[in-house]
Image 1 (cartoon, helix red, strand yellow):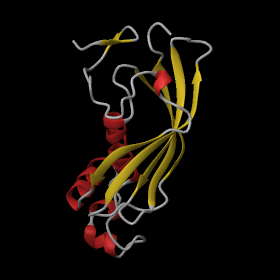
Image 2 (cartoon, rainbow, N blue to C red):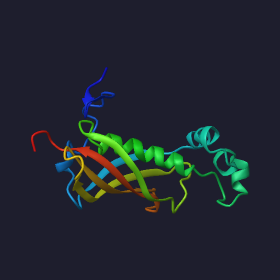
Image 3 (tube, rainbow, N blue to C red):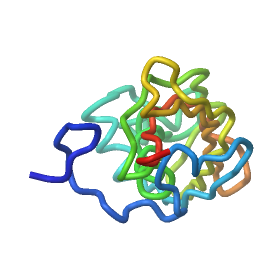
Image 4 (cartoon, rainbow, N blue to C red):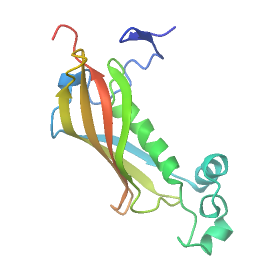
Length: 168
């Protein structure tokens, strides 16, 4: 079994976070973190679409060319999954992340196309200590993914629970 977080067994992701964030107090209001980038190819768009979102503009390049987007595009859920991976690797602290209450205002204003490289950034929009559970804080983060042309392809506000540093 892996280590314990808040008394629960979890997988071992020690050392995953690249930004030096460990506990609630490390997430400073207004701080912005670059969370890396990921490139998207046609094969991954089609594979994800076939399994999870089999609309023609996600799975069939010929049909997609004649469709509303003029070509194949990634599912928004595929984009969200790619963004989540980068947040886990570069923003969420393995030592203290307690999961999420959800996302607010999830938007996909521009499509993701084959060949796009997405850059992800996270900005701390709110950080407050929980009144009911003083061993943790609640962090609201504005998450943005931007494509190669600088267009925002995903924007959301994530709500996460994070442990307070022991002894504080």
